[in-house]
Image 1: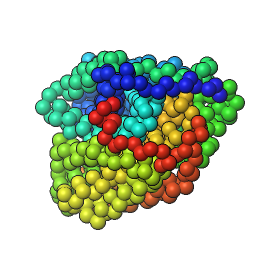
Image 2 (image 1 turned 120 degrees about the vertical axis):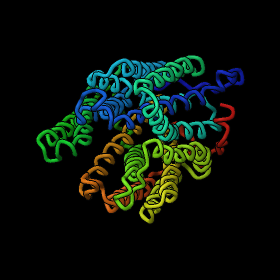
Image 3 (image 1 turned 90 degrees about the vertical axis):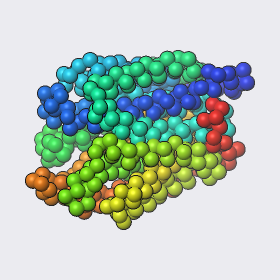
Length: 494
């Protein structure tokens, strides 16, 4: 593997207004990416009427962005390592803005689905931004900035749902996409103004064969996971997709081990510090996503169910909003813990806190204030875990592979979320009762979903504790042996 260009030390001359704006701009982009992923959720019940399409077709408004994001995140991460992170970041954000414009101009379901696939390219924003932060920031400010960047996923999701619900309730549904288009165009302009072009590059040719093989394998895998409940887990289509995924990903693995410049350096992934971090990311993604899925359905369940609160989608979004605020406030704390004790400890602590949050949910899921407390505890644990994951990657891979390695880590979170969605749906479908003639999940079903997510969180904690404290590739000691990061400096002076 070719050695990356050396990272120049940040200088005082580069600390002007534009340089100080880089971290806030990248955080804005991360939040907007997460908002983009959630804005269609309030629309789903009404889209069949608004577009004249079937509910099955409408569900692809979510599936399309999930698939494209999962496929493009590692691909664009690798492209950023080779051709420039800022350049690829601009491309991904421009594709998101273009998708928003197309959605705002049409009501044709096929075009809407294609546009949502374009928007999925923005999923690469977080790994690309983390790589830029590694290249540009001094070590004492890097930890808090990376923690903030990691938290933007939860912050944007918490902000996006109530905001989109209010737009849907009080304005034409196309307005929502015009708003995200304007915000996306603003993000492109801000990136061009504030984000520097990183000098750290990997040489060689882009692995087109590897990119196509990974894309084909992931599409088969995620299609089977996301559509299994609807098509039937034993149906020929789902079984065929799983078999196709196994074959394609197996061939892709074989090709990657033999490629001169692979898309994903599997020898690097085989290092326990990197590979176990990816496993922990998958498990944490599963545990985190169940909180949002189940909470939204639980509080909207009719009061006649005996446990539901009958809240509107706007009220539901407001219930989830404190979780986003918590993620913003706790990201500096995560950086401090990682600096003092190491990101491995932070990850294990975060996973344990997530499990504790689900214990609260199991203890009481009838009172609104207890539901919000349990969801807030899960959000706190997610902040700690999600902030620690990229720190583990940064300490374990060469600078020239930061974006691609973090892209794989984000991919594992995405797969975990997709599996979580399918698993929660399967549990709730098998535990329903009739309320007003309509099937509604029982409280027991929700509690089983909480128990399942809590158990997965404990598994993530166990995996985190097995991650070794390897030194960084350049020979420097692990994070806990270096000067602690200043938790608030990334937001104050970056």
